[in-house]
Length: 387
Ligand SMILES: NC(=O)c1ccc[n+]([C@@H]2O[C@H](COP(=O)([O-])OP(=O)(O)OC[C@H]3O[C@@H](n4cnc5c(N)ncnc54)[C@H](OP(=O)(O)O)[C@@H]3O)[C@@H](O)[C@H]2O)c1
Image (tube, rainbow, N blue to C red):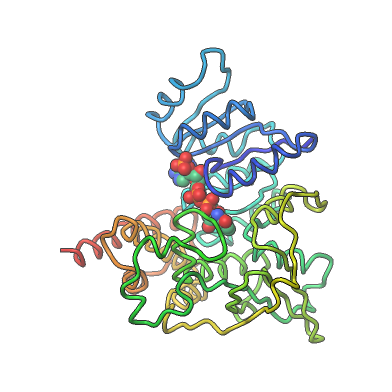
């Protein structure tokens, strides 16, 4: 029986992970959950899975949760960053699903690693911000970081048992999002609801908007660099609208391996939870005869500049990826609040990166400071734009 803690249990990945766990009661037990502010859903999860400990983002949410739970509920409730770190390092857990969205996932994920827990990693921001620190700590602690992101899970599966020196490159595939066929001028007019209508994947708002701008693929390049210890010259991106090939690797003898399947996050989540085993699931089987064609295109970086902005920040390294991520989080939030338009995202993020003094070989503290600086700087830029 594997004991599981989920950080971000009320989100898209968290709910899919719980669905897998509910259907496999002989394999998994939920021991701890952490969420932000969706108290109604967290209460339902507590009643169904009976975790020993939970955490929510604030003290107010502790009161709200207490009010909704029955008096006999024995669940321990923590709050804030320290509370979420407690859930991440809970002694009873064997594996921690890291599925909080954004930079808020970094410190809890590091806490899980410090506590010697294997991590099923969905929170790509952990590696974008602090890939070097996190991967070194994982090696030192002897814990596994198993990717949940479908592209990285695909690469992870293709590389299993292979020699790193035989690898020529990896190719991350991108659906291209809802605006693949839009012109540059059409992109200036897209609405929030259009942006949130992803053609293939059902995900949280932030990652859906990042998918539409291709920022998500840029963040994934940085994530892949750290997960697989690669130079950016060995990481390529191809647009593949069908989202059947989840990613590929090319070896130096010219052989390619690809991992394919229907676009359903339950496949990589289940694999991360059961690795190296596989379990039967209820995902609709892939019917290639129905899919018929698999297309691949070069990404259009003129239309989707975020991809190269992210890649350049990754190549620059130091605190640049943390600044990229923070600027993107603030800009995406402003887009959700309809303060800025879709085409502003790239311009704002680039402006912030241009005025940042990069710290090389940063400490965790340098990274957190850069994150905080970038948030303030991005807000100032947005204020000036909307004035
Ligand atoms: N969704 C996908 O298919 C997918 C695929 C690949 C990778 N990922 C990655 O997985 C991560 C999660 O994505 P998602 O789509 O599941 O996001 P989501 O649906 O927006 O869910 C985010 C989760 O994080 C919680 N949360 C946010 N801020 C928090 C904070 N400060 N403290 C505690 N909890 C907090 C939310 O809680 P409340 O809702 O209760 O506030 C929610 O449970 C992201 O890093 C994303 O890039 C997602």
